[in-house]
Image 1 (cartoon, each protein chain N blue to C red):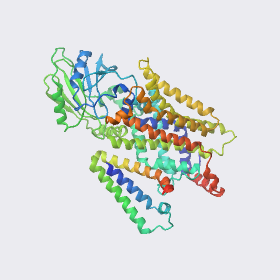
Image 2: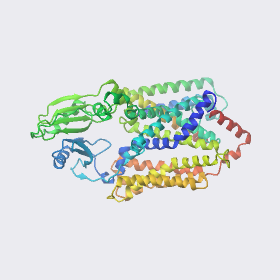
Image 3: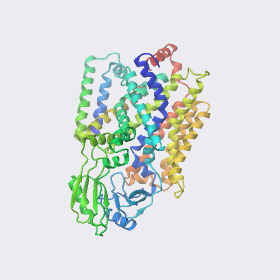
Image 4: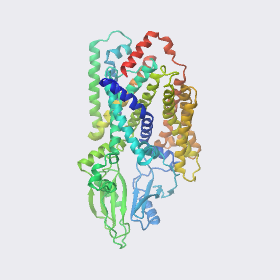
Length: 527
Length: 90
């Protein structure tokens, strides 16, 4: 620890940041991809590529009810999720022994009632789950929590130690020394999107607050966290079934009435409690994302036999709305096409900030540590940088490849897709350690990632997906968008690999030794 | 929405050129006329203000401010990373 406020903050920023940097990069990267979770999942289920959007949201409701009646006539609850702009299919689920179950679901084409059999995959949901739990259960959530806290610390200390935050607001000088240009890149990507970085980091903590600060709920509910969550967020309990059979009322008029009631808002889904009973109750939920606040969608309840409206549940308590807005800002369900794209770009900017910070650590020490005892530590950081940044790109690309190349009926298919990703990631680490020169390791992995990603549209077309060309002809832009985004991404990765592989600084030869000293001094001063 | 981001982008260009350092650099001139810089500054800030109201107009008071801030971030970061390449090629 150094004397003085700024040097102390710089120390914290540098070393605290370094410890969590690869984890934070992975969290930010996976979180950024999660903005397009539905689109990625669609890409990864080619069986659903040819489902046409229905004209009206409720077109398939009769098929859904018929299917539920056939599959689960005795279930306590049925649930129907309607198609929307990001998912053309209608999905149904039902309870088994009183609980909804991952296996008690079906996906239906709303246009003709055909039951679809998409392959088993987590799709884009993998990236979302990974970014808050690392697929390691509650322990993973706590690790992510610690990393997030460090991110918040790094953001705040970063602002404190950035002396020329306004003077250097527009400053980016890639032509200068590596230390200077990486610092510029780090500063610009950090400062420009600072509102986003602070917001997403803080709200990230808030979304998991019932794990991190459980005391209030624990005391009020005598440790029964599940009951608390149920009371706070689940819809109201339905009355118990009477056991007397009665015909279910026609659902469609209720749906249309609800849509009018909410001034034309889209409907998210319907839950039917005690179907076929005299005390059947129908709950219709508004589609999420109509407002900034999440987890606060209003519900309209109807009598399932007479079709009478019973009551409307709105979630308007101040505490819940506050939480809902924080949560909503993080998950961005409110975001339409344009705002989602902006969020994605800011997420990428965050990845650039973290990655450039990690690279900066090594660049600043590159000349100092050759041959002495800390060279091992330096090599370790350098190898982890390569695997943590470029290696993650390779591993993520492998995940998409595994999704298409693993046999459709493979046992534990979901797990195998993820295993492929993690094995590939470990291999990139081994490669980064064993490769003699770090720049060569960077270049190899960036090029491999670029190559794998560039070929994804081809892989999509030859393994049963709707090809990019067809998708564009059919105006299926949600799908075409995934294929199209691979091209700039691959180009950037290839360019980065090429740039890193260039022989060490043609510019440094041009500059005289005096300006180099000035640069290093500037660097020390800034850090 | 497109208007919001275009306004933000133009405003940040103006605010950037309002700084003597970037003005000299961009126009490759040693002069930095005081009044012109001031004009750039006024244009930049009023552009951002106009973008705020355009965002509210297009997306309402809930999502509008989010759109405004996101547009500012993305346009500023795009401009800064483009600047060195522009300077080299024009």
